[in-house]
Image (cartoon, rainbow, N blue to C red; front, side, top):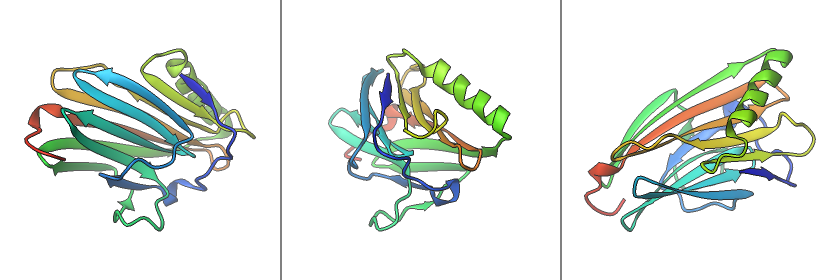
Length: 177
């Protein structure tokens, strides 16, 4: 699903991105829901940021990658990798940022948009001012007891592309998360 967003690209640079778990739903510019292996995933585009909310058997958990200044969630700089366990739910997060020359950057963003275009398990937010200003989320193929997704945050002004991969083990839920 592609959402053309009328709001300007919100994040200024990749160094401002933070990771937080367990945040309440933030105001979103685009939302798309996917049911996967018994879990309900809500893909949310927040400016040039993302939030994924996982609802599983009455438990709710979230991952937020955004500029989070002023929030009380104690966000931290975007790590290259992270593992968390909260309320019996285990998650793994991996990120990388690449800086590309303009032609390579445009080709990579175009490939991401093509890969996600028309899919019922994806959300792509495009922003005015540049066809390369994109935030994309794509749910990974279902595996027993696991929900996963990939995201891309494209910063055309700097040629930076942030890619993240997340996996949540939904078989370890033992109580509220």
